[in-house]
Image (cartoon, one colour):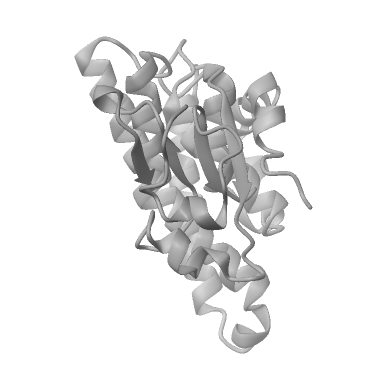
Length: 235
């Protein structure tokens, strides 16, 4: 049995099965990425719900694993060299899981780096911009009722990013063509989330991006998506 006692987070969220990947998360656009990847890869894992309402992501135990105090984070008891490893940042975790298994990322070096580029596109563009749009469109709408600039700024940038994705997906099944990869997994929870979490479908004009919408439907129809999007379950 693996010994995870070196990770203080396991004192707050004890591992029932320390021999499997420990996932610390919530069902947000960033959080579900890792659960979806784990489901796609068929890797056994144990999920621990991090309660934002109780500010658990800022607890000393959680911050000991992710100093930035954000979900998701993982501990893999079977890390490099057979030693446990703790990781945070969803993009880094997806890349780690893909390289660990040799799946969800192309073997060809050029295609591999292209996949990573599209992961970075989401991490540096779609995630932050969609998140800011959602904040001002839904959660801070009352604070900017007399100032449309924040909503318009992030709406317009989100639409620009969707147009980039639209161009990429025209005549493609997946972002990398015929292969479903971590580039898809890191991106579609945010495209879904801008609608489901932020109610932004109309404001962002999703109807203007038919290739993106068709791709999103294909992504959401995958069994791993159906399971992963519900992880962790509501209490």
